[in-house]
Image 1 (cartoon, rainbow, N blue to C red):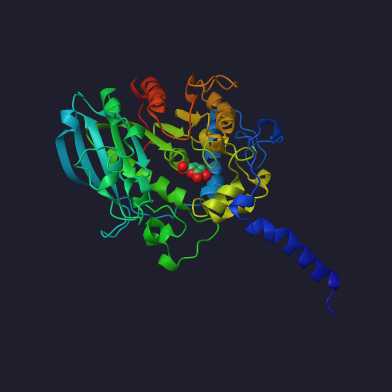
Image 2: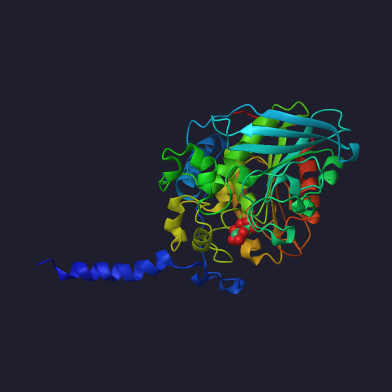
Length: 439
Ligand code: GTR
């Protein structure tokens, strides 16, 4: 006869384990009360997994590699090795765009060895009054390149887009009616006037953003098992694929004679802010990173119980992160990294985090504290980081190489955010840049 204790242990394990595994998004406890945040302890970016303490910058590149591996193993997944980096095709150049202010380029970047796709369609504007190569902002948009401007020369995306009833989209097919609908988030003319170039891509070109979208995107195209692939727990999620796409845009931008390839800033809002940070952490050619209201899995500390949690994001968006990340759903303290270390991976490059007062879901204080806790790594390089551990008043920018503001209002990328980002970029990208390593 089998020992009965085994059966009881199994029943107990099922009783305790199943609700934790199968909990629906709405039953996950969320805290938005500052006084109720329990104490937590962050991993120290300056201590190797072996316990060895890092005291000067000469060992940081090794710790950086260790942290990149930990983020790949446990959070975003590993990018497959051997993916091609193909030359982009400049499909068209219009020298009289935006009322003569800009040169518009439409560029196609193949992401796999096949010409049939998937590929990224990059929309680029360069200021016509520039006298030499310009620094440039590049970032993904949510709904298609044609939504960031009313410029009629920008084509609609080809594949799946999110439904937007206000733009008449209810069948996941792009519509002409959505042209310019996201323009308030992208003050392109102002960016150009300030002497920057601007480039954007639709993130759905890399992978449509729904659970299962990988079958129509890059992850499905390169997976060993094709569209029947079963992802191993350490393989990349959608954020990993989107971040890879950003780096392919950088590959192209560095070949554009109108762009100063040493002064490329990456910007992203919300889930695309998470993506911008992960791209910036991995790709040292990115000179400056801006994460607007990136929240959980972005700039916000995972261990701080406020707003969205690891469990909640893994439940609502199971495709964003790697399988291993789900192990920490109910035990975030066991995660070997936290998000301040994602920011630290950019050291000594400038990083700016923007929050919004009403965007409690993204945990503004947790986003700010990530910068504070990344600062010791910047100090190794003797660059001034944030310079304060006190959150600034609303609508006030603080910091030096690490920058932060909390804007009044809801979750959005706005002209006010851009003013802070442009000022930050003026400080860091307008001065002559030292040569940067290229991969
Ligand atoms: C929310 C999600 C956030 C954030 C946001 C967005 O639903 O919970 O993590 O990424 O979406 O991307 O707008």
